[in-house]
Length: 306
Ligand code: GLV
Image (cartoon, rainbow, N blue to C red; front, side, top):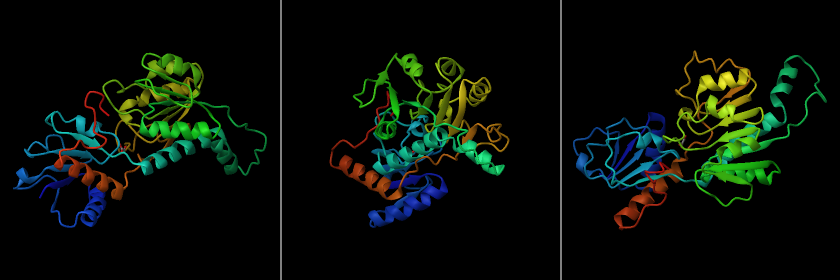
C-alpha cells in the first residue's frame, strides 16, 4: 500500500474512483489512519490536517491536488527533503481564464447596471458605455499568464507583474516595479500564490498606490487580501468594486459584510477546480518518475513557495 489520499470528503470520493480506474492493482489508503504507515510512499493531498503526514516515515512524494501549495507548506512538520509536486493542468488554465474573462466582461459591458435596470423594467439603452479597461494581471505564472494572453488577444490593454522578469507579448513589470504597474491599470486581477510576501498584499497600502479607480478580481487566495480594506477602498472610490472567488475565511461566514455589498460579487472558490482524471494521472506519473530515479514534474520550489 504505497498511496494515500488525504482531502475533504467530496474530493476524496472523486479521486478514489479515478485512482482505482488508473491504478486498479494499487491498494489505496483513504485518510491517514493506518497501522501500516511505513508502507505509504506517496500522498495526494488537499488541505491535510497539519502534522498528519509525520507518521509516514518512508514518504517519497507529496502531490498537491491543487494548483496552490500554501496548504502544504503551512505544515512545518513536513521534512524538507521530500519532494512536493503540484498539478499543472491546461484544463485548469482554461477554466481560470474563462472565469477571469467572465468577471472582466460583466464589468466592462456594465452587466450589473443592466440587471438593475431590468429589475425596474427599464430600457437603459445608451445609458452605459463600454468601459475602457487597462487590465493588470498580478502574478503571471501558469494560470495568470494564460488569462493575460487571452485578454490581450481579445484586444484588451494588458499589463503583467511578477516576481521575476518574464518575456510576455504585453508590457510586464517585475521585482520592485510594482508601483509602476499599479500606475498603469484600472482592473487588477490577482493570480499570485500565497507566500509570506503576498500575504495581505491587497490592502489599503496597495489600494492607495493605484492611480485610477480600479476593479479588483481576486482568484488566488483569501489571505492575499484584507477584506475590511477592500470594503473601505470601495467606499472611498479607490476600488470601483470587486469580484471575489476566495476569502480570508472559507466558507465565507454567513454574517460577513461582503455578502450584502452591491459592488462585490461573490463565488465560492470555484474559479478553477482540479480535474480528477488529470490530477491522478499526474500524481501517478510523478511517483513513477521518482521510482525510476527521475525528478518529478512540476516540483515546487520551497523557497519561492510555488
Ligand atoms: C485551488 O484553489 C487550487 O489551488 O487548485
